[in-house]
Amino acid sequence: MKKLIKGGRVVDGTKKPAYAADVLVENDKIVKIGNIDTTEDMEVIDATGLVVAPGFIDTHSHSDLQILVDPEVRPKIMQGITTEVLGQDGISMAPLPPQYISPWRKNLAGLDGDSDEIDWNYQTTEGYLKMLEHVKPGLNECYLVPHGNIRMEAMGLENRLPNEEELEKMRQITRREMEAGAIGLSTGLIYMPCAYSESKEIIEMCKVVAEYDGRFVIHQRSEADTILDSMEEVIKIGRESGVKIHYSHFKVCGKKNWDKIDDVVRLLETAEKEGIDVSFDQYPYVAGSTMLGVILPPWVHDGGTDKVLERLADKELRKKMVYDIEHGIPGWDNFVEFAGLDKIFVTSVKTEKNQDAVGLSLTQLGELRGKDPYEATFDLLYEEENAVGMVDFYGTEEHVQLFMKRPEMNACTDGLLGGKPHPRVYGAFPRILGKYVREDKALTLEEAVYKMTKKPATAFNMTDRGEIREGAYADICIFNPDTVIDKGTFTDPIQYPEGIEYVMVNGELAVKHGEHTGVRNGSVLKKKGKEVVK
Image 1: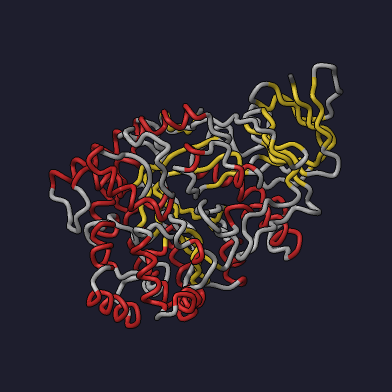
Image 2 (image 1 turned 90 degrees about the horizontal axis):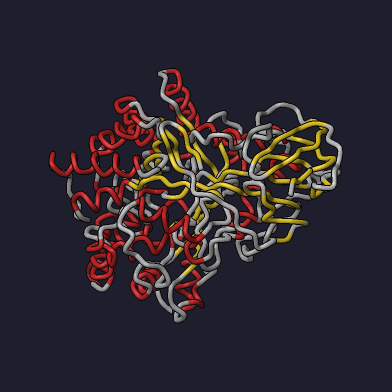
């Protein structure tokens, strides 16, 4: 049946002023926009007083494993997200050679979780994407091939540089995965084994990605003390490979580094003047979220999770860990230094034994366990086999708004889905519309919708997505501009937002009157040529 969205105010995703119009949907496409008469073969959606916008695009998602277990991904769809980009931070599901399944599951667990409910023998991006298609996801899903997975297949998990044969193998794997439909390459240069690499290795993979007009998405080596050097490295990668650059969750961490913000902006602008295509995503909060293991010095991670656990069991090595955290290591992003033990909170654990740690700061964890907070934290990481999530507070509202207004910015969640998550999992996009548009007036409604739809669709070459226009796919979010807002807090994050009234994915309603319909109508989007398509 055709669907007629009647009486709404269209914000089409292009930054053009909002306008009154009806929108007619047939099958999976928008077929007409204007003043449309109702006929008997139409389901009418009354959008009076509501905004009709393209479905939101989350360019930094961690649903990679969860979607295979729970394909609806309600935390995303209920906030208006209709497309998400998986494969982030250089650590994800594929490729995964059978001999590395066990250590890789442990390495992945802190970011994307773990499960015995799935078959881990899919081996390649092609195999993983077939699994995604089989479960019929509730959202559109696309995938970045992760640097860490490529490196693992080519040379294992050791802390060393590749030889020429291994480097050639990395190029070949990158090409194979791009041919399978990956839309680009990701890396996370604070995560193992990505952190073992130098620029040359990444440049060689990015040359392959550039051939496909893919995008290189990077959690850069530093977002704190050495962020300027880190950005220079990323720009060098773009310059020497020809690849398009996309910085993940862009920010500057730690009060002592806030004086670097002007130089950070200057580097963005210098790269663009040079002709390098640069974009970044951002979540609208002053706190971040990742796996708790990142607080450990880099040497602790050498050789993978099993080696981490061996070192955590060694009392003398624990003393060295504390010393390095307290004194720092040049070039290492020290989360304890720029957030503090009292501003890092446990968000998820794997076992029942330590559920009482969830929601506590590391200081509070020490108090609960009756021991030094470092020792309590090391015990927790050891007992949970490093599968612990965290939230850390690092910035200011002023800086969030500064980067949000930048032309390179598009919105994301970057939310880990387990335990007591960061509230961005449930509310990042409505928060922008409610707090930063309606309340703070940091952006106009049209600017915000553009940064949530057309901007990311263009950056990632998503054909006929991110726009309300005739011929585009009917990924649509209908919301109340007067009430839309996130509801989750850091102490009670698992709350759906207000004001998201309808969400349509490829022409079918997944959310109706603010309630999930149970419909799953997402597609796996793949790169074909230079476009990302169904």
